[in-house]
Amino acid sequence: MSLLKDDLKRDKFILLPKSNVIEKVEKDALIRVTFPRGWRLIAKNYYTYRIASVRFEVAYNPEFTRSGNIIPNTQTSSFEANNRANLVVIDIYGNIFNSEEVVFFGPWSEDRFSKTLPSNYID
Image (tube, rainbow, N blue to C red; front, side, top):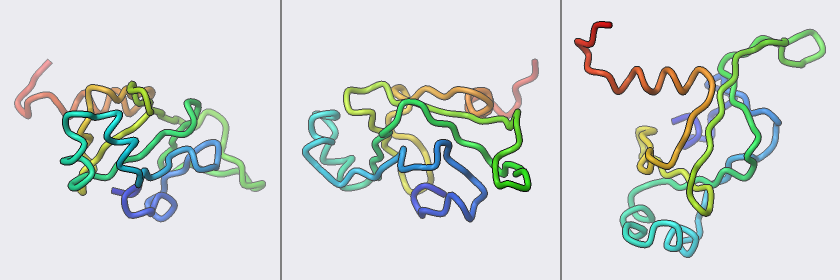
């Protein structure tokens, strides 16, 4: 949701490096080539983002040094899209449409998996 509303900073997320590593896709042609069967549905009902940099990290609510740098050893996560255009498709609730093509690394990889378990799961 923070990405959809362009509220990453307000919601205490930070992208490293600080640049436009995730950009919104407005071109139907790119969506059509990447998702030939479902592109109309996606273009009409979802938000599509392109991951412009393979190497980036996301931190939630990081602590900063006096000089404004993130403190060392801050836990970060990242993700990548495994399709030809590096596209991630999400709905208005932040759910990933093409979740089979998105791989998470770091703490988010464990957290996202735990949300797929049944609520009565006991290890």
